[in-house]
Image (cartoon, rainbow, N blue to C red; front, side):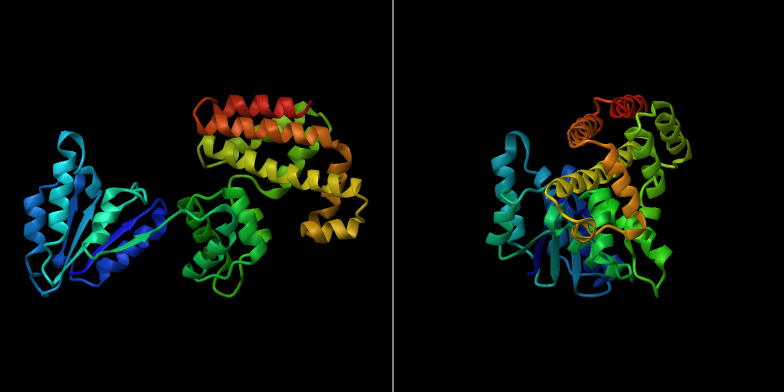
Length: 320
């Protein structure tokens, strides 16, 4: 009586696991139900019937927890518990939910019925680089650790976005080459590293006209939507300014330049430009810029800011 529950917000890995489970069965012997409009008698019948071409059958139910809602919630949960405990030996019942929390009653019901529960959670920030390296191997490419850290910093923790960027990077790198930080700088998002240097140069010099011209050039050239471009710009600007702030702090502490380059693992191709920009931006201004970037990113994500107008205002304020 195989009973499985796959749940969690890591859509990529959950869907991978679902595809792997389906591959073990003949297509005609895989039945799919949706909890939002489920007929429990139909589900029970499916779970007690042998497959057409093979005695083994897979029954997949998406969002079974949505069946147990409303006035009949308690009774519905009892019905579900009974259904989970009445499976034919040849039936595998796989419950799938991207929304289910770990303390939901369905989790305990599955375990009480002797089922196996697997949670696919979005990796935590500290685990992102390792997840990216592992995921890169699934795309047939080796991801250098520095490239994984940079990708995590630019894209964030969304597994779907990360996997999409990894697919792009794997195609670019091919089978023989590893994914390097330089490749990530070149390919990820709408803005290459040189463009960010030019934009930060303009901001550091208070050259509002040049900064806005560079900003509009990126918006016009981008194939993504305005919000996606805005978020990438914010993340890349934040990454650049974070490096400059760490350089400033290290210099104040008396660290030699060579040690700073090693400590921050700076690409030596960009090191001179980092130090030149750090000299032009006082520590207080860098801290204020971080706060402004964080505020704008939150406003974008919550729908309280218009991407294009907000970017213009952001760059104008950063120019001082």
